[in-house]
Length: 111
Length: 116
Image 1 (cartoon, helix red, strand yellow):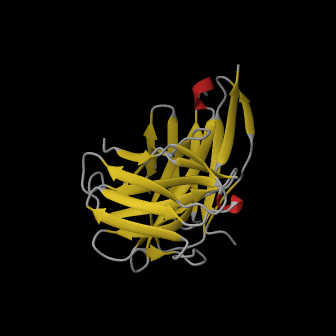
Image 2: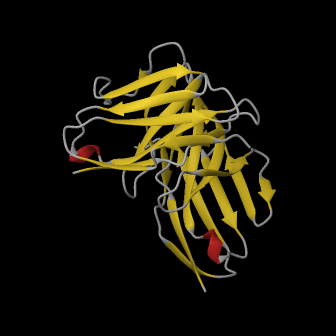
């Protein structure tokens, strides 16, 4: 089983749609959680951290459920520019920090 | 925010040659840098952790004699792919953690290596 699992997609949605991505992680000792965005042939860029209380940044809302070891990202009012791959990222401290990346979920937003 | 640069951004080389990739933290010091490799449609896979002033720590399955890492200063880490083969063709990305905000990793723009 992969340490961080995501639905690879692709998700094809029209502009203005709401889309949700899910991610599960296997190590209950994981401490920090993030969503990164990666455009084609580019490096990943931090989209937002994920906190237990849930957090929102504009059109983006992230949720963490530690009991279920589950993370989600909700994008409202999708824009064409949201088209990218969204990476679920988990950081563990097991005798040293280790960052685990999910394989990513591809999103295509169409006009 | 913090900036990490990589050089070159892309390289094409013949099989059997060695390729050096540089990773620099431009406006902060990084005692630790991470080297990742990403194949098409796959996740980033950590290859090794580069430590300034000491030996790199390699992940399981990564050949340390093939992927030479040197962390010469607090702002520079290099990855040398020795005797490159076509299966080494990939997107290599470095990153460095910053002190603040906590846990943030800053990524370089990546180096696309194609071995013919």
